Length: 272
Length: 365
Image (cartoon, rainbow over all chains, first blue to last red; front, side):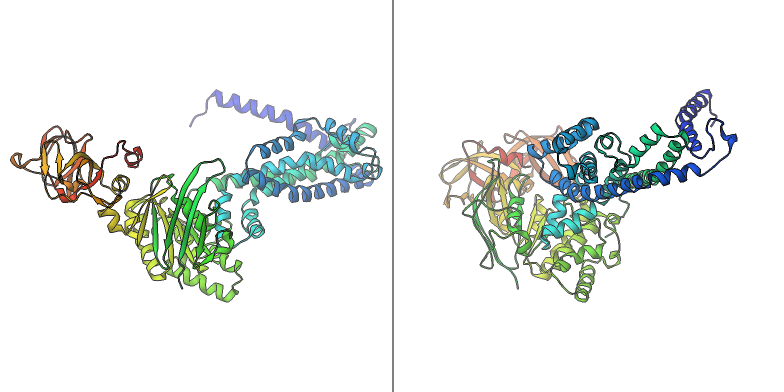
């Protein structure tokens, strides 16, 4: 097939747009390993900045990972049963609850943080602990878990699967853990990756909620940009990148696999 | 060991106030196959779900299994086997794991469970599918797995909710024959829900015909077919032709024709119909084509369908609605022609005419 000028002009436009987005990322990453960014790449490459960031901010990075992990556990324990109830018992109240649940996504993180500060700011032990940040992260990420799990659950005719299991003698919890949860696994996995990614990268809320002793990775990043050499900020970005990319790729892969599974056609022959 | 099931005074009103079932009594003998037959929305599935423990009767209703009151028992405790129209197999498990699920729940030992799963799969002729995933199976194979899974736990009663409806026609007949053989072999009490009259006839020891939440007739397939007790049943089991008539002094008048020796017994009132307007129901064999001089009626052919072993004519001008008449497959008759028909009085089912004909009877077809 001969390609005409339309194809090439569209290809060109696409490449230009991609470069527009990709080049700053590459520049920033390079800046993190350049000896002196103002002299350019000719000044040579170094790992010095990365080591410096790790020296200064390892605590923040570990705290972020820890919060993300605990946040994941909480959203799993709360979110999966919640999604089940929302799908299994649709009605006015569950609808209302779902709206409420989604609210933290819709309102600005700053407003949510302010509300938390006004309410619990006086509880000193709580205010100054990482649990305060965790609260914000759970509020913010829970709807993503619930939505993701509920989407898979509403596609699988849970009522009938449960009736089938119940007729075989399985009580509620056994049905839940042997039939419902395993079949909702794609949604749970997708939700889990989303929660971890969002929690690690969350800035708005966290910036308001943090104390000097409870700084997370993105808050540290802002800190580095504001108060240190550009190279250090860039090196920090590079580390953040390395942490978050595998998660994003895993998420994409999962989504693709889900799509392929639902596309698979029933090819078995009715020979019996 | 078979289980007798009794439902006493069971009615069902849903939360929104709709009456799904009027109070009814039904006894299912141990080892018997009962078919609940009726159009959609007639309440047949609600009865099945009541026996299963997925719905509960309104206050006052009692359900017993062999005399044990199970009215308030949940489905997990009732030991029922269920087969659903859309299979309800667990997609996260293989065929063998699906069949073993109930055994595991009941705490059957690993060795015994393995042996029983193997026997079940062999019985359903699907032993080669044991390690397949559910989404690699065809509809017919899935329903076999569902049957094996339901039977594996040795339930007190097997409940089948339109199990063949999702399958294509040829497979439906084949699996129906197999289910029939299976039910006889197991000698298990079974309740089978369907809207397909042929399926009901083929499988049921007795058939319960349902209409709008009430039992219209209970009887053997032969009874239901030959002696429908009301217009709804007659219509539903295929006697779709209808004519109006009059009984005068024990003789049947249709238009200007008078017929003697008609069996005009009204089963609902247990009396011979001697006088008054009647409705006649009959199948395509209730009328036959004949020469002009022997004709009771003459009508006009509206449509001709070639059914292979016979020719089915749709004829207008005889009754208020057009009627079906069967004739020899070799006859050459075209739409628009006049046709002469004779009536076979002994093939008629006669009911006293109701002031208002129930719309359900004609909607059902």
